[in-house]
Length: 222
Image (cartoon, rainbow, N blue to C red):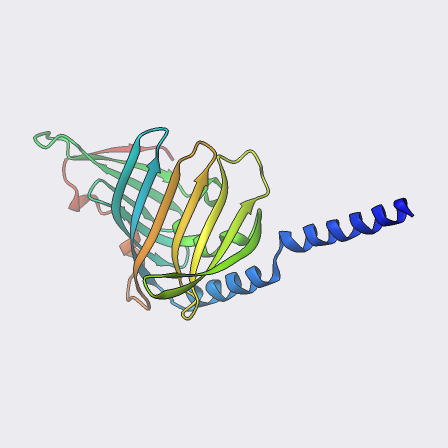
């Protein structure tokens, strides 16, 4: 009798665990989010990027934006860094911190290797499709707006983070907030404040134009 009860318990437990790993409600919410963002065409997202760590005594917030067209993007963080990706080549420009320096910055050129990027903001809406379990957590009201909260848990336990939490607007299905929980205690918080869909942008907009950045050192690692 005890053995039978144990078997029933284990069967039920394993079934619940398997079901929970790919929560169908979470999957439906994520698929709707993915569809909405794919239908935006070329778009621009404006965001705040915050790094917080009590252990490291870090509490830093930066403003940023990203323009995306298919697999191409231009990412700007504050006035210190810009990344141009035209789908084959990546230009990473870092502005010089020395105000009076003749060298105004440095641009590093590399080949685009999508598999090497841990988080690609241009593909963040597809993140859940590979290497994650996902769970619907709750509905949450933020600033009088209702959100579905979904957690992504990496299957690879060697990652530096153990969870990514998404806040997806319940009505529009847009991703508005994202928070990464690192094992060190550091939290990275991305809050999207504005979306502009169906932008008219050309392929040349995703190529670094060195004429606009005179006196810049070029480091070609291709």
